Length: 276
Ligand code: BEZ
Ligand code: FE
Image 1 (cartoon, rainbow, N blue to C red):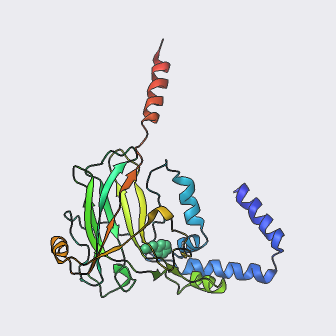
Image 2: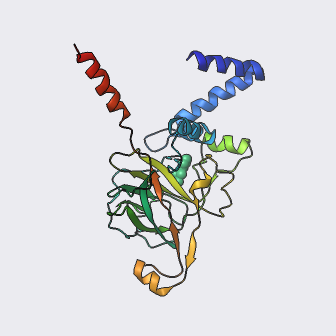
Image 3: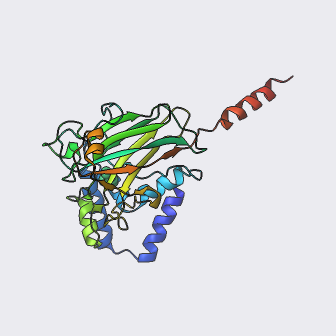
């Protein structure tokens, strides 16, 4: 609190805040709070568009070289997505262009991780998540997949589209006042976990998307931008139970092994304490 208040006072001194500006700020924060309910969290959205969420993420997920980078979780995750077999589609309404996403989940030393869990979610072709759109079936475009013995995974989704974050509240007004757009570059969300490894919340972004350099929530990372390659082979399409043309993405994820050091330290100090 001491640090926060020091910085807050320094900001007010630096800009010589007027009483009108103070009143406007109070009004803005009040409206932000009033916009929140069980479905809408306008304060997190405010944190997202000011880069605070990604800064907290960067500080708390300092990963070793080679580990898949994390990015913003967002408000549209739902627990309880169905666990689906290898290669199944997460699209229940059949809209959009199919994409086959495949690769491996590895440890940072390159060892494949069997039985890792990939929990994936994305918007439909209209840029809306299933819970934002009464036309979509429950749990549309959500699914959980497990890696096989070689650490391989495969699922079918749809080629994601860029979409606007909710901008009908105070955060949207702030974006407009700043001359900023509300769009996020097209992406698929993934939450990847495995026993003995640090889980990672991440995305796959579409190379070439027009919003990659101006993500409204600063979530883009170069290492997560991938080529969605178009395929036209009827034979390959039949193999994946998709129509032509379809897209294919190949991506290996790497997880950081959980440290055994804490255990080790506790054991040593315990041994030390119990020595006569
Ligand atoms: C999302 O990618 O789902 C998201 C992230 C931050 C704010 C709004 C949406
Ligand atoms: Fe998203």
